[in-house]
Length: 398
Image (cartoon, rainbow, N blue to C red; front, side, top):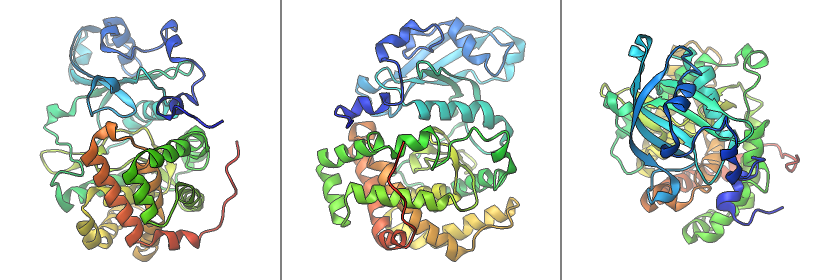
């Protein structure tokens, strides 16, 4: 069945409960600031800190999709100050960003994924990423809650395609990614305690992005609705269907290569810079088992102007490979092999990365600038020709 009201129904496709029924479930975390209490905040924090109790809290700001803010994509955010009643909590951050289910949609695999990262993986990693003090996901309703440090208290800045952050920031992000990728590089744990991870060719996240009636339907509708997207795709000599098939070929190919854990959504807007110049990553909703170039390509293409990317892409790929070696990886591809994979990976960046995204999520400038960078990379790298050499894959089946 084709989804007609794609802006909402697309995210409900994988959620068995109607939005209006969520409030009937006692274990559903609130979606709005007015419904927060010390009890449900305590329940959230105790998922990671069982002895800690929230004694009071103050809401500073709330971001939900329908309040006119161009600051919300797939989840709502509540800025809050929390007080704890336990001495043990003295080391916990009190300035928090509480991520919640959007009241109008429930992208189940994205919410589950991010909670899994923060509650199952974050504690074993030494990469730069937000501190999480609690996370929960409800399978019945797809509601979730995440209590994350408000990183502004550490003086971080958040770049985007309009900011002048420079090549050094991209190198800092690549160093962070190399540390993440090296930690899980070809890990035997993928067959044991990490076998719950989705991949780009298997699992609910895969279904979300590959089922013709889910994200591909959104992209078809977005390209039809937005004239600039329509003409951009036409200018590449492609159709959404062409790009969909290319994306599937690339991800099937990447699945034959050395796996690691990927952040999954490394556009420049999901990075941050600390005062010392080091970089971190947030928004882990697309985290999965995958191939390193999935992450590396996306930050290089979205993080630099077209001219900068053309000038520095080879240097940055070599820098990443050097960092990977520094963190102990001995079987990484060479620079030529990595650049071929860079050409392949640009397809996902263009197709899934931003063709999915409505203008209202980030505003006109940021949305269009990302599309310009991504479509230019696809053309410059001749990704069409590179992907044509990959084996064909059968059509998607449930």
